Image (cartoon, rainbow, N blue to C red):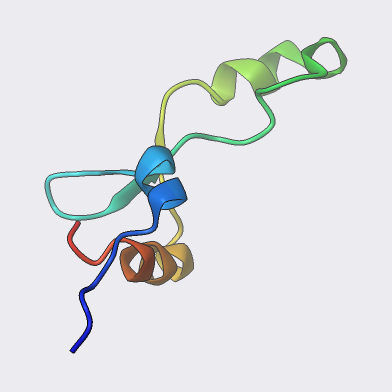
Length: 65
């Protein structure tokens, strides 16, 4: 059986909680920030737990996480 490999781009984008849930950084924080309301920028700080439907996909990309 071939070696299981982790997806390199996924390694850089996701972190995991102690219980194994994937954490992601909220989107829309890279450029054109002058157009966005201050509330939107403030709520996009830090990390958030990914949706349950995305958890399966993320764990498929990172089998050893």
